[in-house]
Length: 303
Ligand SMILES: [Zn+2]
Image (cartoon, rainbow, N blue to C red; front, top):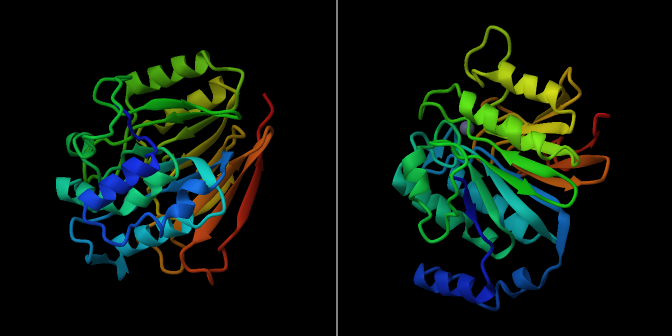
C-alpha cells in the first residue's frame, strides 16, 4: 500500500492551513507557490528526516524539525515546481510513533502545494502507524501484502519504490522474496524505459549486517534487467555517488536530519532526468559546505 500525498489545489491547501491554525500561511505569502511552472523532468529527494513528536527535540546537536523545515522552504523557493517529491524513509525519529508522523505531516505541508509526495518506509518507521498517519490522502493499492511498494511512470524513466523495512528500530532491512518477485515482474513489463529503483536501505557490504539483508537478490535484478540504471537509497546518512560493478549508479542520499559522521552534509537532492542519464545535485543546508551544489552527472549504462 503506497502512501502518496497528492498535490493540493490552492483552495484545499489554504483551507487545511486555516484548519491547522497555521497562521503564517496566508493566501498572499504563498501566492507564488501556485503560479510557478513545473519541470516535468525534475524531482526532489528528502531522506532520513527523523522527525520526533516534539519539534524541539535535538539529536547529535541537530534539530531535525528545523532541518526539514529549512529543506522544505528551500524547495518551495526553487524557481520551478518538481514533477514529484520522494521522501525515502526514516520519516520518524526512532520507532515510528503516531505523534512523530503528525509533526512530520505539518512540516511537509508546504510541499503539498508544489507536487505529489511519495513516501517510503525506513527502519525507524512503523508500518501500521505510517499507514494511518495520512487518512485524508493515502492512496491505497495493494501490490504486495504487508509491503509498501509502487511504480511511478514518468516521461523519461519509471520509478520503482520499494519497502525495505524489516523490524522497526533494528538497523538492517529486507525486501523479501515476494516483493523481489513483484519487482521482477513489474520490470519485465516495462523494458523500454530506464528504470530507477528507490528504497531506504543500502546494499550490504561484505561482513556487515546493517544494510539490506537480501542485497544479492537486488543485484540479481540489476543484472537481469538492463533497463535498471540507478538505485537511490538513504540509511547511511552519507551523501555519496558511485557506480556498481553492474553499471547501475548507486546514489546515497544525504539526511535532512543529522549526519552520523561530523563534517558530512545534510540537506536534500535535486534530480533531473535526461534521455541518456540523470543529474543529482546536493542542496546542503550549510551553503558553505564544500559539497554544496555539487552536481553528479550520470550516464545510463548501455543495455
Ligand atoms: Zn536514518
